[in-house]
Length: 137
Image (cartoon, rainbow, N blue to C red; front, side, top):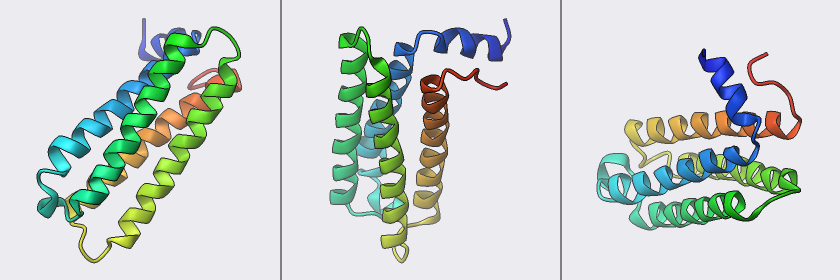
């Protein structure tokens, strides 16, 4: 089975998208708290800002895992909500990069741009799932 077929089979159960999103948000929270926060001078952002982003990522993770565990029908509404939240997080991240443009390092910018790209991919997957479009036509 090729990668395209595996992805299509996985998203035929839309609740699985919540698992992807939940683990992604959890990974973000762990990286922010244990890596970026402990090496904040290397990345160029204050610990408080990284702490706030960690808290948001944890809230998003709890939301996604809760949706996976509790929602039995009408999943589209909840998937749309997490999609909007992910877009908000990306915009917030861009705002943080711009706000701290004088102090953020190249490594900080690279990390956050990578995070935006990864979240953007998840948002596309979520939107395609909501619209019931086939992934990678």
